[in-house]
Amino acid sequence: MKIKNAKFITSSPNLKLCPDFNMPEFALLGRSNVGKSSFINTLVNQSKLAKTSNTPGKTRLINLFEIQTTTKPFILADLPGYGFAKVSKKEQEIWQKNLEEYLLKRESLICTIQFIDARHDIQKNDFQMQEWLKYNNISCFNILTKCDYISRNEISKKLTLIKKEFQNDAIPFSSKDKQYIDIVLKKISSLI
Ligand SMILES: Nc1nc2c(ncn2[C@@H]2O[C@H](COP(=O)(O)OP(=O)(O)O)[C@@H](O)[C@H]2O)c(=O)[nH]1
Ligand SMILES: [Mg+2]
Image (cartoon, rainbow, N blue to C red; front, top):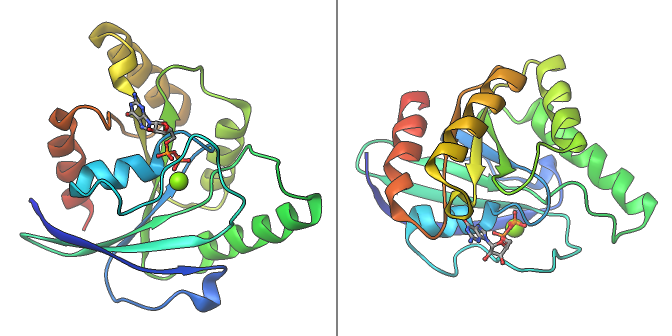
């Protein structure tokens, strides 16, 4: 499977305002700054499709992208990162509720993808998110991002650790290195 084209559809604050596409959807989860938006841009080979930044923004929106491929199309939902408290407690609670509703009730959602930063240990909120997904029977695989920062040996150790801790499949990625794209597309195509 290869990507033919990708386009941004819309940003929705909650499930009710997410359009129905009738296409399998993957939701991107992870701490702010982990590299979710860069992942989308690298995967689809468009440098500015998803907004990336060093300073995570305050907007709490579900950003939906339609991806056309040589086989089946799919949707990527870029979600605001967790672990970033620049917004008020009230706003955080509202977003938490919207996120949970989206993850629990989005009918087209077939799998979540949780991103882990290769430079750091798995963080407490990564574990918490994973526990919540497992408790609610939401399937997930992990992507170890920013693999350009660590050696091949460290990549393999970290992937083994994630697989063991989370009991999920885990694959490597770097937005600086196109060699990982095929691994991701193979994984996605096995699920759609
Ligand atoms: N070296 C390196 N930097 C990355 C990678 N992915 C993202 N970044 C950088 O990390 C920062 C946050 O990335 P972004 O995609 O906006 O993260 P998001 O908050 O999860 O969407 C940006 O400065 C990116 O350029 C990667 O694979 N390698
Ligand atoms: Mg982002």
